[in-house]
Image (cartoon, rainbow, N blue to C red; front, side, top):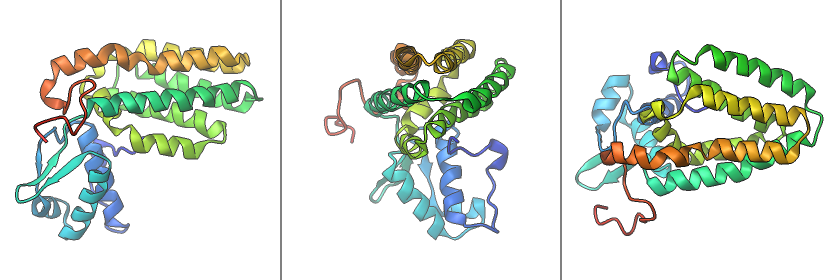
Length: 242
C-alpha cells in the first residue's frame, strides 16, 4: 500500500517503534501537502508535538532527506523540499517500464483468482468517484500493488514506492486534474486485457494510464510554480537557488 498514514492516524502509538512511525507520518504530511514546500521543520517542536525525544525526529529527517523530501541547510534549519520536476518525470518513466512488464506477465499467465480480486477493487473505486480523493488514491495504490503481487513481483512495487514520492505529491496538490472516472475506466481496460490474455493490449493500456500525468504536469507547474524546484530539463546542479 501507499506509505501514507490517514489524517486521523497522525498520532504515534508509543507501544511500537517510534522512529518508523514518525517517518511515515511526516512523509505522509509532506506528500499530502499538509507540510508545504519550503516549510521549516523544527526538530524540538516536532519532538514536543509527538511527545518523543529529538533522536527519532532526527532519524526521520535523515530518511526523508535521502528520499528527497526534506533538506538540511547548515545554520539555517530543515525545510520541506520543493517538488523536483525531473524526479516526477523519471519516476513516471520507470513506473511505465516496470508496470507494463508486470501486466504483460499477468496477461500471459492464468490469472483467474487475481481477476476476481481486481474486479472487487474496481467496484470499491467506483464507490468513491465523488468521495474522498485521498481514499481513491489509496485504492489506486492498492490496485497497482495487487498487480505486482499477482505477478510475483512485490519487491518491484516496493522499489517503485521508494522513488515515486515526488509523483505522489503532484497527484495530491492537484487531484482535480485527474478525472477519477477516466482513471477507473483505464483500470478496467487493463483488467479486461489481462483476463483476455492480450499481452500487447495490457501493455499499451498500462502505458497510456501512466502517461496521464504528462498531459497535466505542465499545467500543474504553471498553477503552482512555488511548489516546484526546477524547470523541465533543468538539473539540480544548474538551479542557482540551491
